[in-house]
Length: 463
Ligand SMILES: Nc1ncnc2c1ncn2[C@@H]1O[C@H](COP(=O)(O)OP(=O)(O)OP(=O)(O)O)[C@@H](O)[C@H]1O
Ligand SMILES: [Mg+2]
Image (cartoon, rainbow, N blue to C red; front, top):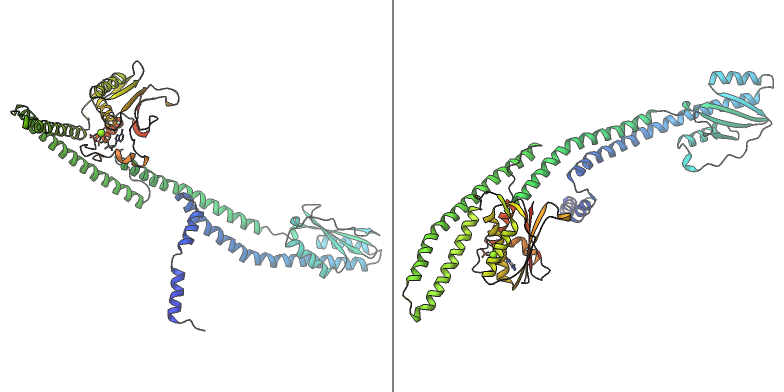
């Protein structure tokens, strides 16, 4: 029967089409790590191949050898038994002596004895297939009742045959039946697999380390932290990826620098005309009709000034200020006092003093931004300064809590991004600047849910 062309094509296509569910099932079973996968890919075919070779070659080969050896021994035993049985009482010792040294069998005869019941042994103790081969060869060539004892002596096989007038016992060396090549082959199989595994682990560890380092560098850079270029290492492809990462990092840094410089330039240039506009507004003649417009305009100009200030602070990155020993508590009280002056209700809880190495102006701006956000979104604010203690040894904390609407957990990371603002008048730089400042101090800032119901900003600073 022949398969028609289109039918064969679909059959082939079905075979070649990657089976999604199979792939999914396979990847669920496969180990996740690269090292484990490579080991599996290397070792599995090797072990399977060697197992097949062992079965095909040695399975057949050993079978033949075992049958030949057992049949030789059974022939000797059968022949000697017949000779002993046929010999007269005078010639019997002579026959036994001759058999002993010419055939290498230790012989003894117990007159008038009978074979006892064969002791029962569990099946797993049998030296299959050698034991059954010997048994069937003996049944064929001895043709007398017999039993075989493999276990009384580890070096000897004891065969007992029931003669007419007693029991003839043979002791044959096990070496007549057992070949050691099988063990050599098994040791070679296991040894080569272990050797390959060791070499693969040693080699792959370096490759995996290089890939992992690249992944970590990309992750931290993606989170906005720059730890400098990475050293290309490992195989050529991994090096290539590292070089590409370094080039990309260069380009992104250059791009960000250009953008911030442009932002700084524009903000700086806008400051002077804005100041002039505010001055001119104060000098405008006021009439009852224009009063409201002038007030609104002044408010807009002030708003623009505030934004320009924020852009400038962001672009400058507060990089010029040097860290000095300063009192965190004093800076926090100053920022809180400023927030209270602009109408906020702030509870304050803090220790007497907490001296740290700080860039005071930058820190004041970061705290100001957090308090400004809280003031705009909530009615009550609580600020807590925690000195390093307990599990948080080595870290001081500043918590800014409010009772406002908070930020859903999924949007907290987004809120830190520069220029993302929920309000029309915001620059979206407040949190970005606060995070830059805290990170420049070696600390970290996180947004959480506040016990007051709103948002909690948690600043951690190394002591
Ligand atoms: N305490 C808070 N409660 C609720 N939402 C907040 C709070 N703080 C910040 N947000 C949200 O996160 C966004 C980003 O805040 P961010 O301070 O970075 O920018 P902004 O306040 O909009 O602008 P700017 O601070 O420059 O005036 C805000 O627009 C607001 O939607
Ligand atoms: Mg803000």
